[in-house]
Image (tube, rainbow, N blue to C red; front, side, top):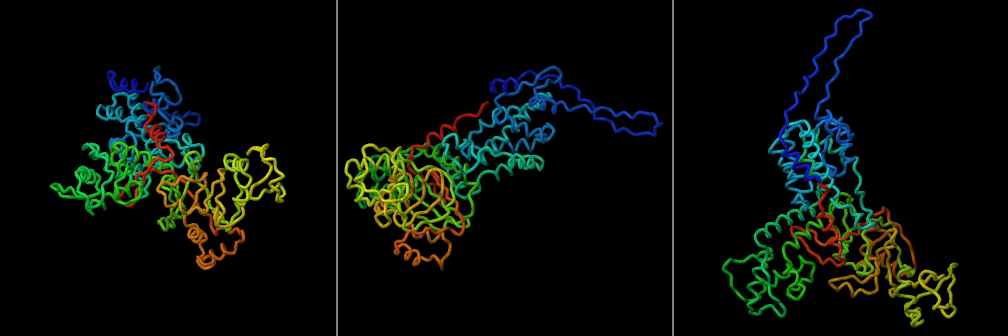
Length: 559
């Protein structure tokens, strides 16, 4: 409906401009007699201000109700914005309007759609300035609505992450008071472009994603990259006609630079290194062998990569402004963990995450303590789906996995005394606890970050799985490849907790809890594209979460 109304407002016949009442004259007070009553002239309200006020109060102005858009979003916030300034018009200087329209047009470089910010209607008004107070009010309201929406989307993201994932707890999408105050100050100081630029994440990874989006859109405009044939069997040193389209593909994506006249058909060392670079940028094992995964990635259209960058820029807006100087970040899609200290990447390692049907959730929690030689208590989901069926099939499963049955008092119960057929995960009255040791599901160290998901980080006896390129093998918790080094970093005491002392605590075999000197925030995130230096790394969408973000991101705001 707003679209129809906006067109009507823009192109309706120009009405005569009402003659505005002159500004009140200064009243000179004369000496009065004792009984003289002093009277001041009443102040005539500004008609534009009254039209704006009427939009929120639904009062009429000279018998004509202001019929602007019901589709203006965040109407309560817009009302607060104007109420704070007595409903006076905001956009009284053309330079401010120019800055805002320019910022809206460049919102595409942040993966946002300028159409969400009334860009067509604003251009019409800008080129054909309003001729009546009502049109001036309409123009001002649209500009302010666009300003508030764009500022919010740059700071927090367009999509409310909770609408896609109820577990989201990293920031409060609905926070507005501080932002509104900042925007009021920006208007007063006439810093429209500056404040919008400041609101987008200033993290280098976000800014590199932004550059990557611009770069890939330029590639799309030029026709994208060529399709390559099946590359199976192509080996270093081979002479093969498939090298020609492969080289063209690698040139377009910037993985190799060659002379335009290069027509060599040899898959030489330089070509192998270019393929390795491509594989690394696409989350694959960089072996230089162009197998099926490499073939598929090369033939993904550039438009898909543009979508992937936009999706992950939106995800970055959800959390990146809330990162603390020191934190741990787990990227589920990359199967990686990074330890960031004072804003700098200090250390990283590989991890194993939840299987597609037992996904690791996205959330934030503080790491508070670690446990050396932990005993694993089988959680309800694994008990119901894995352990009880295995015991019913063969009771030797308990001894093989070194599981003890404990009653409510912690006493050990004999397996022979339990009627396994009558219990499910819901009514099982015992705890199954695994003894500590290298055989244990938690390995030798557990990192505790209390949370509602009962998800934590831990060691694992199955070290060989870290060599897999795709590592979705757990039941939701996060297995860490180098837990001893992570323990040394988070304990933050090189003397008391050196590598040698950590190893001694493990070798002692005693279960021991050690609290961190300072809690460390842990961000467990899901990013399928991220910046690494000047490169954009693309990853497989292992949990199929990208499409929901893209759909919500592309859904138009009410117009």
